[in-house]
Length: 75
Ligand SMILES: [Zn+2]
Picture (tube, helix red, strand yellow):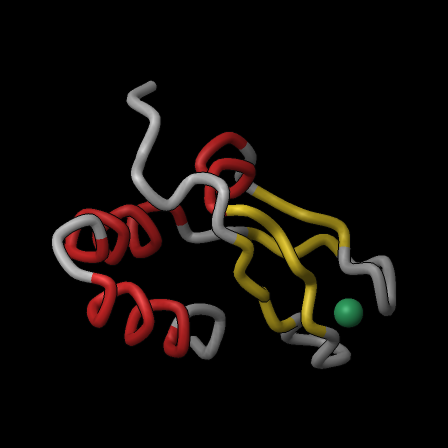
């Protein structure tokens, strides 16, 4: 897999059950399709299609990245 410009950047994934902000790097999120919530230990499924679509745009502009990260996890 191609290493992206923002792979080392940490973002927070909000748990849909308890709302805990789980900090993960973008490189980590590219590799795994689910994460265990630190707050309630629930398994959070990551929507990679949605995530990668946002990431493709994000690679073009930091502003796009910020917008993508703000919206990620809300749905
Ligand atoms: Zn949780």
